[in-house]
Image 1 (spheres, helix red, strand yellow):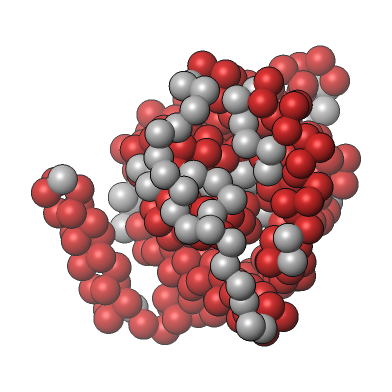
Image 2 (cartoon, rainbow, N blue to C red):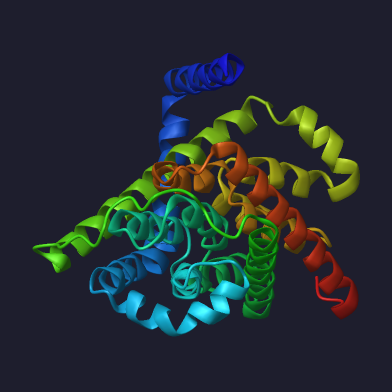
Length: 318
């Protein structure tokens, strides 16, 4: 525990020192992070944040969950699993985690359900994967759709396997029963704005931090290990992407090569430090532990990587 805090403190001190020593350069990088968030993340995330909040607040998702009880029960999931997974797929990070926290807050699920749903409802959305990564980064919508299918399929399959081998029921009590809201519309928009600003803050902070760490050659030892396998450019892009995934995806697209697309799938599915911490802002309240969530997301990312490698070998797409 102390070692973790010491490492985090050292990184923050280095970050602060870099901002003081080279303010003009990193202010510009901060601006680039804001531009990336405004152009690539807000349009693909904010509308769905509002929609999902309204669907949950009005009770619509609960009504459509009832007929799915039998199907979800076979996979040891609550009836709300399918609509929540669909909302996560449509919205992207960190909307799925926010929905899980909302469901727990309303009393629709318990802590055991929240742990299962935390990894199932942890996906990027089609507007980001296809529109931002596929079209903007790779200039190819087909690659975007391949990434989308691989990422969502990986999350669904690995999460269902985990649920099947986990205990069928949780002993955790329900947190709170159905709350009433006096102004659902205002609360939904306020919550969406707060969530999108939270996501933007993380993106800008970690995007700038990744540039500082890159300039200080902090990633050099890891790049040295990964370069013989993935190539120097892809290794460098992967290292920065593990801090902030969006910038890493663009760097991988620029690098090209056989491993560029599989590594992009890994970053999107895992999420990188920025996205993982965004989700944990909501999931920590649900009793989800960092160690469990990070480990499971790493497994999902690795599975997605190998799936995309296989797809490329079979199809010849690079």
